[in-house]
Amino acid sequence: MVHHEWSLSAGLCHSVPSFLYRVSLMMKPQVVFVLGGPGAGKGTQCSKIVENYNYTHLSAGDLLRAERAREGSEDGQLIANYIKEGKIVPVEITINLLKRAMEETMQKDEKKFRFLIDGFPRNEDNLQGWKKVMEGKADIKFVLFFDCSNEVCINRCLERGKSSGRTDDNRESLEKRIQTYLQSTRPIIELYEKEGKVRTIDASRSVDEVFAEVKAILEKEG
Ligand code: UP5
Ligand code: MG
Image (cartoon, rainbow, N blue to C red; front, side, top):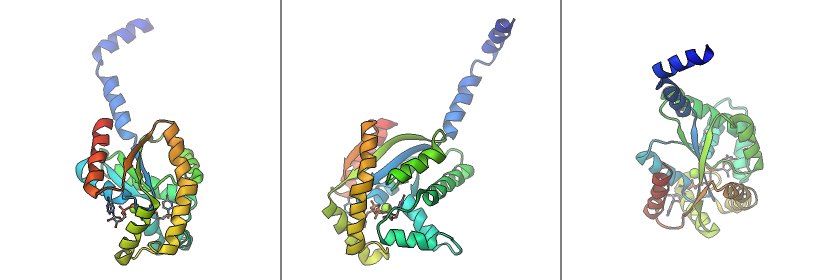
């Protein structure tokens, strides 16, 4: 009897389950983590990706700087201190900002479910915080890793510091940012490397040369 009912509806609604399956996949955020040293070009390349592909760029650093500037923010002072010292803000703050930004984006337009999460996760605390809040709720497609020497990173940030107004684009903060990157962020990239999830790009070349490689990776990954 049960079998009979099932076979009747199976013929009738043949396309419904696959449609629902597609919708459920569409609704789940698809995430690319974008990592690399300070000034490696994460933000620059993410902007170019957004111009050419259907991705939303969320820079954890930009979200933290906006929260730092927000009047009435309880975390503003803490964020300011951490950024200047090149230290990584406790994940409870960052993950809430990221989650809210993702939700707001998808509420406005449900087709915007692809995200470039730039500058996160930077350490073990970030990784655990992501897992606690987002595991099962978003898929990590891969990690784009912009690889370049510390020297190139420092020079780019010092150059930008002439006009950026960023409190951490000075030699003293940069030394600390580089140390944090080497000690805390590289091990996270290595963890993803072991899972076969890292796509490494030589970020020391020109913006256009780097982007050509980014494009090749995105076309391949689909
Ligand atoms: N430039 C870019 N590409 C170039 C190229 N190929 N050739 C020549 N020049 C190039 O680029 C940096 C500069 O280089 C620009 O002037 C650009 O024109 C030029 P950009 O694209 O801005 O590089 P990006 O990698 O984004 O550098 P950024 O300084 O943003 O990297 P950081 O990772 O240091 O900064 P972020 O904003 O992510 O974080 C800042 C701080 O916030 C952290 O140190 C930390 O304190 C805090 N933070 C957290 O605590 N938690 C987080 O999750 C995120 C941040
Ligand atoms: Mg940036």
